[in-house]
Length: 218
Length: 124
Image 1 (spheres, one colour):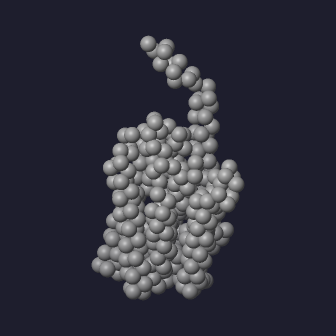
Image 2 (cartoon, rainbow over the protein chains, first blue to last red):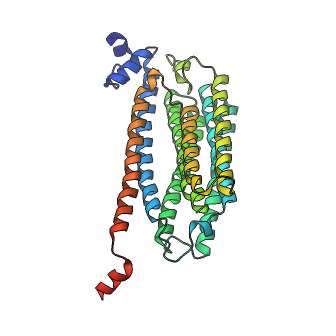
């Protein structure tokens, strides 16, 4: 085992026993082990991001009743808008997966087509969210109105900022594939991007359940 | 590039071909759509007994997160996924501690705090 692991992982990146095991399982080449380690490292980042979101969720859950005489979620939330946002993000997650398969199999039409659809759906999501926020501020329910609305704008806005950053990252990845081709390091970046995009959809599942559906049903 | 192993680069588990990879995403999308529709449906009408709606929504959301993890993020029980699963378990533990701990502590503080009117009178 140690010999195979040493050739698969010459720099001993996978020092822990589990990774060494994984490297020995895939003793086919160092690149595959490197891909697993890159995914693992980015997964750790995503989990820390999710923990940060959990703090915002806890803040929201504590402050949701403190409306200071202002409007509550029941008065404000438009579930039709939220359903469209949810559908856009879910389908963009799907097309992102198809696009990453297109990148692995080096099919330009799959990669560029699916990733363009991903970008359009993500941009549609952001447009709807900005529209919703602008409507709330216009009717006097901005983040300064009450503790509930401060927590709401922080939580939902933070997710929106993540999606916006993901859109910029997606454009960067498409430009990198266009300029440099399907290189191993570029493919690892695409793997990280798709992990990021799917994780944002997981956070949105928690968000529309806790904030919108539970808020509107109170 | 010459020693690059295309099989090792696939997003899906080694040995699976791309049709299976696409099928994984299609199945995941189908399950996620069903769970989402059920969530929005039971939140919007009185078919389900009112007090049980938050519980049902929570169960549906956890199920959908599981679907996303398995079908989109490819978190599996395979040997090259042990570290990912362990990190996920730790992350879930921390998230539960933050959520449940915050709600528990803040509810108790709220319960034990002097009513706001009395506090205002004392400050005068």
